[in-house]
Length: 358
Image 1 (cartoon, rainbow, N blue to C red):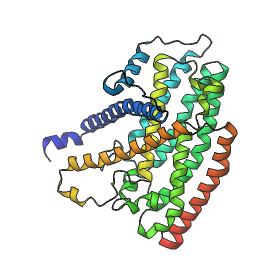
Image 2: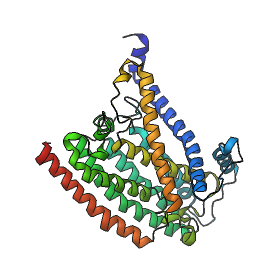
Image 3: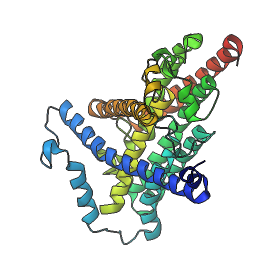
Image 4: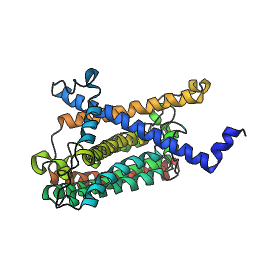
C-alpha cells in the first residue's frame, strides 16, 4: 500500500474525502438547480407560446443567478408578531433536509457519499422530516394564511408518503435489498431488466403491477413536493402564497432551493428505483476497456439524462394540468393510491414467494 492510499485509509483522510464528496455533490446540485429552474420556466413559457426568461445572459441562461443575487441582497423582513427563532430556523431546516437526503444517492458505481444498507429507509425518514420545516414556517409567521398553507402541506405530504412507501416496498421485494447501489446493479443489462418493466425476463409478468406503480410513484412525488396540480399549500387564488407569505429575501430563497432540491431528488429516486439508475438499457460490456473514471462518467451522464427527463415531465404537468381541489387530493391519496399500492405489494410478494421463489 503506497503512502497516498494509506493516507486516505486513516480517519483524517476518510473525513477529508467524505467532506470533499459532500462539497462536490452540494455544489453540483446547486448549479444544476439554477439551470433546471430556468428550464422549468422555459418549458412553462413554451407551452403558453411565450418566450420565457431571455434577457440576462445569452438566451436568459443567467436568469437564475440574477434572481439568486436579488434575493441575497434584499433586506430580511421578520414580522413583528412572529416567533423569530422558529421563523428563521424553518427555511434552514427545509434547506438542510433537502440536501442531506442526497447522501445515499449513487450517481455511478462507487460514486456515493454513504453507501448505506438501509438507504431506502434513510430516504423515507429524511423526507418525512421535511414536513417540519414547513409546519414551523407556517406556525411561526403568526398569520392565518401561512398557518393554513402549512397545515395543508403537512396533511398532503403525510398522505402521499404512505403510498410512496408502499410502492417502494415493491421495488425492495424485486431487488431483495434496501441498498440503492444494489437496487441499481440488479437492473443492469437490457431495458426489460428495469424495475419499471418488472425487473427482468423471469419476473416479466410483474410489469402489470410495476408500470402502474411507477406512474403512482410519479404522481405521489408531485404531491410530496407540492408541485402543480397538487400545489394546494401555495394556492395563489386562496392562500396568497401559502406558508411562504411572510418570507422574503434569503429565508424565502432557502425555501425555494429546498423545494427544487426535493423535486430533483424525486426525479433521481424514480430513475434509480424504476428506470435502471445509471444503466442505459443495453449491456455496457464495451466500458470494460475504458478507464474507470471515464466509464463512471458515462454512467453518471446516463443517470443525469434520466433525471432531466423526469424533471421535464414534472414541468410539463405544471404547464397543462389544472389544480386539484383539496378533497380531491385527499381522495386520490387515501382512496385510490393507498389501496392500489397495498394490492400491488400483495401481488408482487405472492409472485416472489410462489412463482419465482424468494
